[in-house]
Amino acid sequence: MVMIEAHDISVSIGRRQILSGVNFSVRPGELAAIVGPNGSGKTTFLKALSGELAYAGRVTMNGRDLVSMKPWEAAARRAVLPQATALSFPFTVREIIGLGLTGGRSGAPAGEQDSLPEQALVKVDLQGFAGRFYQELSGGEQQRVQLARVLCQVWKPVLDGQPRYLFLDEPVSSLDIKHQLIIMNIARDFARRGGGVVAILHDLNLTAMFADRIHVMHRGRPAAAGAPADVLNDELISTVFECDLKVGVLPQPGIPFVLPQSAGI
Amino acid sequence: MSVALIAGASGTRRKVVRDGDRSTRARLAVVLLAVGLAATVLFSLSSGASDASAFQLVRDWLFPSFAANDAISARDAVIIYDIRLPRVIMGVLIGAALAVSGTVLQGLFRNPLADPGLVGVSAGSSLGAVAVIVLGATVLAPVTALFGSFALPLAAFAGGLATTLVLYRISTRQGRTSVATMLLAGIALGAMALAFTGMLIFIADDQQLRDLTFWSLGSLAGATWQKIGAVAPIIVLALSATPFLARGLNALALGEATASHLGVPIQRLKYVAIVAVAAAVGASVAVSGGIGFVGIVVPHSLRLAIGPDNRYLLPASALLGASMLLLADAVSRTIVAPAELPIGIVTAAVGAPFFLWVLLRKRGILDL
Image (cartoon, rainbow over all chains, first blue to last red; front, side, top):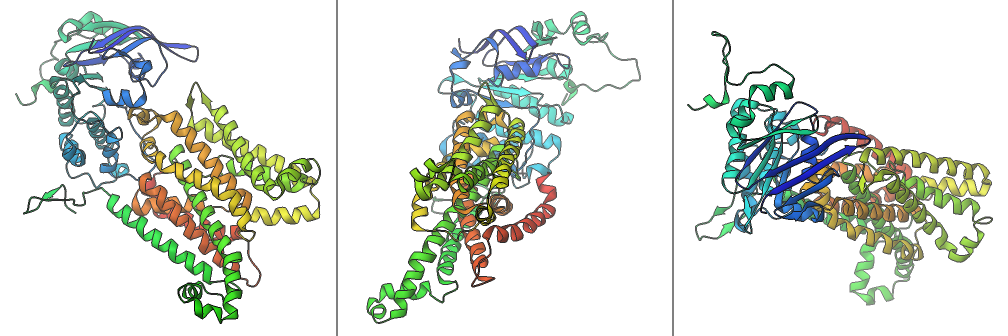
């Protein structure tokens, strides 16, 4: 099947079992969000999916077993945005983004290859930042530079007829609301153009707005999966987040609230 | 600086320097450093206790009739070919080896302060060398008998490689190397090698102690064509492997996981880097003893000038490392002429304050 499928994934670190029995899939054209409380195994699962952690079970990417793929083969099929990236050398923003082209399979036409970093910077709303030093940027700017690097790696969402994937670990965690929307739109656009996106998110409103499918993790196990309207119900999120929550209930009159959905209405 | 490709009137495309792209500057720097090294080599061949000049020698090459009538030229030719030239070649080889080893280790450990001395490679090499100096006439007599004058370089090389391989075994689990474990294990292995070295020094006699002191201070004075024959192939082979590591080391700056996500075969990269460093450092330590700070100062200052891209940093380090060591050697053999100062004293005396200065000046950017 042309998709990513994870079957019965378990991960143990030391003697502690972090994940058990996770089934997951993401199809081309789909933005799959993973939500869940802290420590529920979201990042661990994404690390298994990207081949960073050893796991029991089976992951296939476009029909091929992940274990059998060489690093460069996997890199041609998916790009991974980690939560945070610290640097000890004085790279410029352009040099960092250029590292996304290490594998040489961006999919962009040869003539455009050199200008990809600039194009990617425009996408993440950082035009003019190419000559700045990465270490001098704010946390949110650094996160967007890393996303620009990741975008360069899989510039075309479909390469050689095969869909490609973006794995995003909390891509909007340190961003203001404008840039949260910009980044989520980039992710959705990547999916609409034929790629697949797996994103770990914390903001349930943003998740409901952008995700095609939500996977809820709870204590290392999948708690639910489905369309936002099916998954986000009072009972499930109250149980999973251990907090008495109601879906679609407005606060008391006079208390302001701002939803991302209201942008541009 | 403007951005992008500008389409000229004739429709031809001209490449323009982009913001944040330092590759043009870096290429220029590599060319300038190559010219600088050539000048330094000529200068080193011409300077010394005798007034023999390489420029004269070049002149004699071009006009052989001139030389035939000149008895002094013959003496100068001996001084230059048999004394200065091997020493200069040795200086170039070792300077390049130490600087490139530092660059590779710093990339591998993602730490601008990593150095062959830090992970115990130099200590392991020293142990091998000291063992031959102290035990060469007794316990290791069969070894010295077998290898003759090659026993010392080979032992140092073996010591460096053994340390690095043990280090790799300790810090690699399930095919993954933890940099933290590796650094700490390197410190422990270095301390162990130092302890054994200390024991050997404790049982050494007076003459051996004298040899040890001079060897450990570092010097290019013992350079001969024979020694070059022993270490040049090792160093050249190790150095020629490093350009293939450049892109991988660049990606590694983002962390092991991210480099792997970018398609870099991390385990192979680490293995090649480690063996190349062990070989280059082992060979260097064997013939020249402890020459410090080249592996830290050279890559560090180059990174500030041309950026951390290893595709340019590695060749630039080799060139600048070679030039720096030649200059240090020129100082060491002229400052107290006709006697000689061990070169390790010169590199440490110049290198350590320079390193501190760089560190203080750029503290913000390096975020150490």
